[in-house]
Amino acid sequence: MFSFCVSVNLIFVAAKWENYMKFWSKVDSTFKAFSIFDSSSDLSLRNFKILRWFYGFLLLAFFNYVVFMLRGILSTNPCSDGSQTTTANESFFRKIFPEFFNVFSFNIAFGIFLLIIDFIMGIIWVISDTLIITISLLLSENFAALNEKIAANLLVKISSL
Image 1 (spheres, one colour):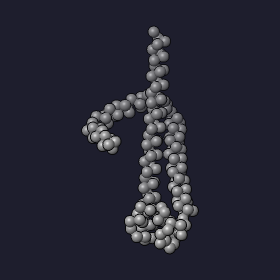
Image 2 (image 1 turned 180 degrees about the vertical axis):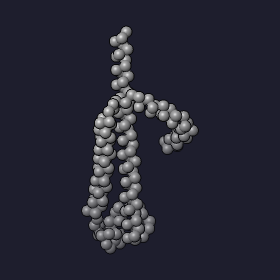
Image 3 (image 1 turned 90 degrees about the vertical axis):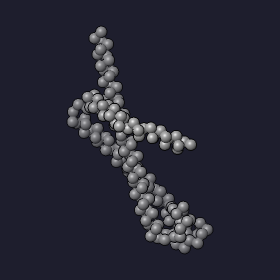
């Protein structure tokens, strides 16, 4: 039911997407006028922070993937799963991809193919998550800058009264 509600809301958002993008263009041009980064050194520092976060998240995600693979390798025991496993390779692939190899018979080429696909999908997932986090950080910086400019202008107007 929740998935249906989300789908219906996405249809309404998609119908108004052009208006949202026009509004966002206006907001984005407003942010440029209220930028707290006055010099190129401030901007390069900001870019350095963003790249540091981006590569930090990628490094953590890669570490997570390596730990996942090591857990699969270290917990592989050819005699422990009760099936007709004959090699450590087969036991490893059956442990990492049990859904696939419970339906299809084991083949080392399928296992390597699934491992490559799993790695690529993991990288895509991590990059998309990192991109969302980076955009969120940028937006929060821009909103903080906008709030500072509004507060400064408000204080100037109040003091001039």
